[in-house]
Image (cartoon, rainbow, N blue to C red; front, side):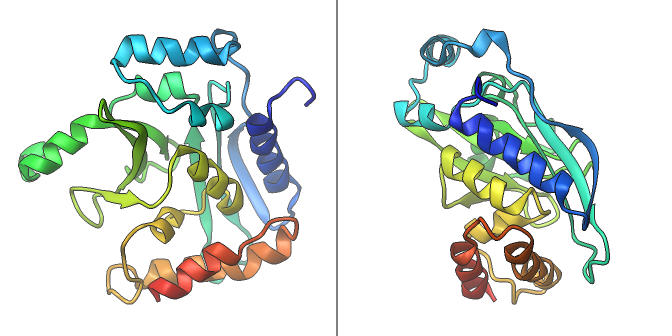
Length: 229
């Protein structure tokens, strides 16, 4: 992996961790292939500005990866909560070109419709087909785009996440895409009837993963779970 940058190496390591842990059954994994069009990171950011009119914060270059797609769907053997997950991510030029899927926007408020139009899909679940997705909110006034999680099972407007693109990728490498992990960074309560089951699943993740992946630090995620219980 010597020809990969640090962000790409972290993603490849995550894929290796999933495959090497006997407790996981991994499906439809794509470890990531470098897109030659993204070899020059400065040029890639310049192209984003040219296509969107938005100059992204240069700090996002620190976590820029060149993979056309990095994805996996998985389930965990002998999980009491049926723990499973999926992620499907692409490099930033692909993300900013991927609008949120068509939906019944007439059911949204005017503010929600405007926000939804600014969403660009960052991470979704094409294999399991949950319909949930994480998105960058592209806005000329925000060089560091907000991250939102959209799941129609909970509401129409989505949930703003308390992290940026780089921290999203960091959290993804910890959670391995466990379904619903994004809510650890949203203003929700797992005591709410809609979220009780999810709280149980994430509790199992944060009990089991530190033992399976001892090289990672899960204390922040564990604290976030406690705050929402």
